[in-house]
Amino acid sequence: VYKRQAKRQEPDHRFQRSHQVRGLHRQKQHTVYMFNTIRDNMNTKPIIIAIVGASGSGKTTLARHLTDIIGIPSLVSYTTRPMRPGEVNGVDHHFVDGSYPIPHNPLAYTFFGGHHYWTEREQVVGPVMSYVIDEKGLVELKDKWSGEFEIFAIKIERPDNPTDGERQARDRERVALPDDDYDRILHNNSTLHRFLWSAIYKIGQLLISKTQ
Image (cartoon, rainbow, N blue to C red; front, top):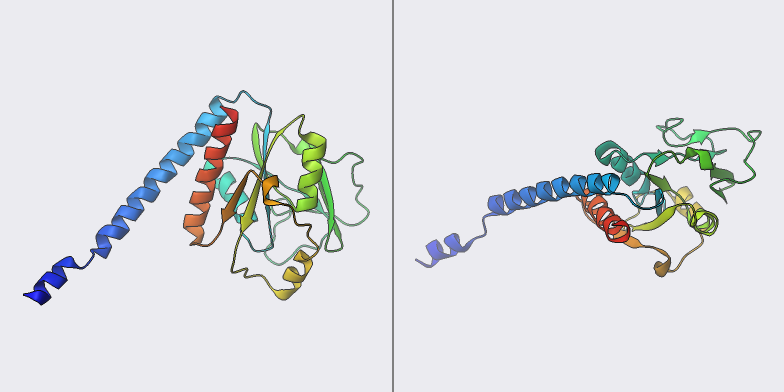
């Protein structure tokens, strides 16, 4: 009798997984609805979602997901850094050589890892755009352009950084900003799929709370 009772008390993992899947599906639907609402009812300046994080934290993947799923374009920076294997010119960066002229008044500029990175004001072409940027660039972006754009600073933290030693060493050049400088801090400590949808949902909540 005891064994039968114990068996009946075992959790139904299939039900739990099904419930989790349905919950994530509802969150996805609500997330898409939130961003459509933001675009349809904007009464603010153009929005730049500035995404900051260490190498391998997931910032570029998040920006691509915002484009592919929500339709928010990303500001693609120019850089004099050589292209890495797997990168695509015009998607990951606009890769240029050292003779390419850096504009006198860029949207944001930073020198990192021995290379120049920048974007131009004319690249902001939509009501909402994302921008993968480092801490120095974020400070410049806010200082120069807060009067023209609504800038929301997002920081991604990842405890198990998977990048190689060389990129982690370059990350030591980064300037640490206080957490209060960010509008939202996201923690990439789950599966990639769950992190991306949770991150986009929280960004949508932030934009609605600040712009509606």
